[in-house]
Image (cartoon, rainbow, N blue to C red; front, top):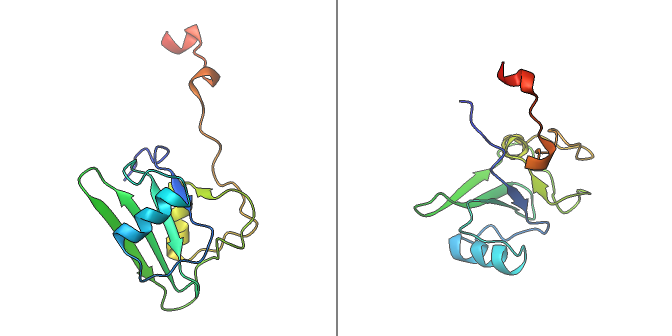
Length: 126
């Protein structure tokens, strides 16, 4: 399915998280530590200390959703060891959930264009 994943922002909690935490406690971490809005529709990624479990918290418009994954083999990348930004694209999140390792965190996508960076040529309409 092709869709606009650019509107989805994924924020990464850069500390190990107790994976016993559920909706309300993870939501409190979003508000107080990440300074985010749990009702914004943004995704918030949390990884356990042993890196065998990860959770993604997001609001889908009707309620809070919590995606949880436990790796049977291997481990998730440790976001607290990564350098650079604490934000991912939706594509990077999908790779992360599959267990891919982001070495050196190379940007996988070009930055999203802003309205003032766009230009239209008269030839585009002929």
